Image (cartoon, rainbow, N blue to C red; front, side, top):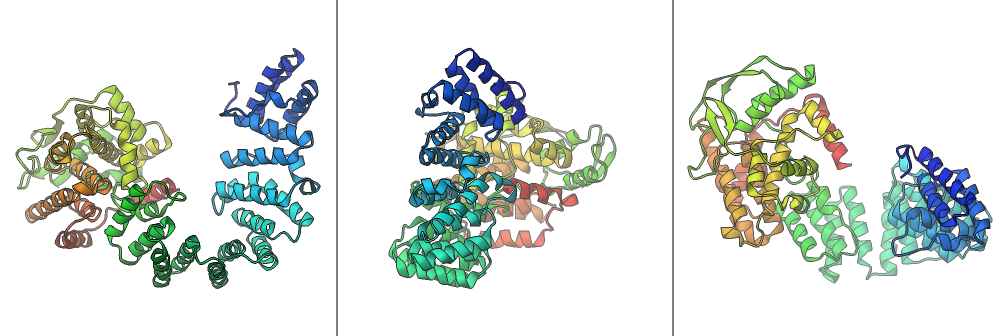
Length: 606
């Protein structure tokens, strides 16, 4: 790799210099290699194309120097595309450029003169152009973010020129509309799709028109077009799901579910209808069993027609389904406020009316060196004692000072958790899958992480948490360490397994953030394995009931979070759900000083 790799143009110039040197020495193969590197860095740089043209003259076309082997380098693919176009085969060259764009849509592979010349479509078959445009559309978002549209605009120019050459090709009009819609040219998309539907009426033409109307905010016309698509082909159930999604986007849930039911009556396993149906039913009544059923369907049908985001959309932003809620202790609220008002501090005094969970006390002490904390009293039942005497002890106490009772984790464990720990995840099964990265760690290492959390990593996220709420980083470490325990000795039957025994021990240890983390892991196990749901639901119900009993005598800072965990647990009985909702309704949510946490969640979701 040449120097200056952080500056693409500088890197391209370095590769280009080496290519020229190799070309002057007659080493055509090395020249081609460096040219491919230069194109990968700066695909529209004129000097790169000048040297490529020189190479083509020296090597009788040079195509053999850029072979399409099993795993071709993208720079070689693009170089070959340009050589093919220069040798009178623009159709083959354009296919390669489209493949490069589909692989890496953010690079301007097509931003070269031969692609946007008005004469190019006359050398191509309109069906090929349509296929190429649809290939591009399938690889990018709908719509593409405004700052990412530049590399796609040459293809839109190609579409305009193609429609000048072939103005009555209905399929080309529809495919061009699909691309125009994605790059923000919505009115143009409507005009092209409307013309295509009139010239060549078909299901696909009406779908393109419906999508264009929908992007333009013309809902009634979008629904009318999609209904006509159904008339063309009543067996294409994906259109039913599109109609349902459009209706739901405008609050018409009952109508939307009517379309879903029509689709499921034709094919109860049709993935688009199943995903959309569960999402809409969850939106309508908020019942968790819809999402659990969707997760089960995803597990049992790994070969869906395409990737679906319905489960993730429903879990995003929801405590324990898609993110770790912020801590609610008095000490953590004070810390966040101080950091928001003053930034990093040291020293000072803090008086608490009662002792709070050991992880909270330790995290604040680590964030404010020299802080003196005075605890007025330790109310009964004593927060320093496990909720069950048989539970594993992670902490010992010297008066009101919590001290880790297990050894520190290994360097390997620290490195692994710093790479993996994160405050948000797509959905519980996705969190389980991600935690497999901790599967090779020993139980002692994972337990050590719970009470010896490392510093956050030097990443944007790590620096943000360190600056605004270091307690959230501690919670991240604890949650992911417990998720890692789920992958320990997975060959053991659940009921007598090490992973269950350790996690249940942690649930019934001293009242702490570790309690939440361990219960989160058990809840995640219930999401991915229906066989353990009754067991986990019983554990969650019993732990919540215990917190309610304790709360009659003293405050329980983790009560709200335990209630949120119960609401995220499959198969919980109605009485326990009602208790959880009462706790949440009665508790005041943790404030978010300065709004930074809300901004962080929005950033993480993007």
